[in-house]
Length: 369
Image (cartoon, rainbow, N blue to C red):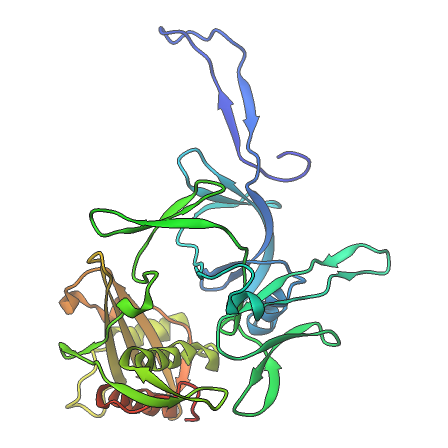
């Protein structure tokens, strides 16, 4: 512990070739890569954000009110081998942080639509002049407009269907920082992006820099139609099958917005143990099973298996299973994961939208159900 906070420490022992100590042992303390509040949900998800930020308040509303999570403060250390280790400042609890989700957007820092539609919140101070909420820049991730409401201190999104402003969600906007980089394609077909200032680099998979490289197949048949669709602003446009599928998949992502299921861990596990969906058994609790096959330009494959289990007359429990292989025959319903529920009418919408994608009919992700 240093200055009342837990940190990472290393004891250095210097010896000769025979193992004899030839210097006094030293203790070196790690320097945090960054310090942050973080929110831990009851099912183990980590969110790094300030308590006083808009996202922090949203977490309180979504999880804290139901006692499904709690706040902590910790330091994130970057080790010599490139691992990120989170150490709680109060009790010293630590864990290696893996698989942190981040979105990567390409655009011009000054002239892109992403930049022009960004907004900045106003910093807030307490009565003593102390900063209680730093300014933050938010970027819209949908076609809807976003704004900062000074009176409520919340970020809002314009619902073009209802013609009114609503509180924004994690799907509507994101917080980010601009960087300058270059990307390269290797001989093996992998895309690598390199930060020109820091030298940090990473491999881009499942999503390339050119969206025109994305294709949609249904039962091994390429969907290559062009249809007329209406944007959120009312503009009629030509849209591809890929665009139509994205609207379908966007609706799937909305599934978690209904809320947390009121099932116990044991009850959810029992549902996952049940046999998979069967179209010949109308009484099977597994009402619907959807498998989405993904393959990028480098040949990397991933299958996403969605299952919906009815547990009341109106509610269905949803799980997602991720398979990092081409063969979906190894799919196992017990390995599905989820804590949310959807309404029965939502499942009817998903079935209808899937048929529309195949038949070349317009899918509206935000349509009522």
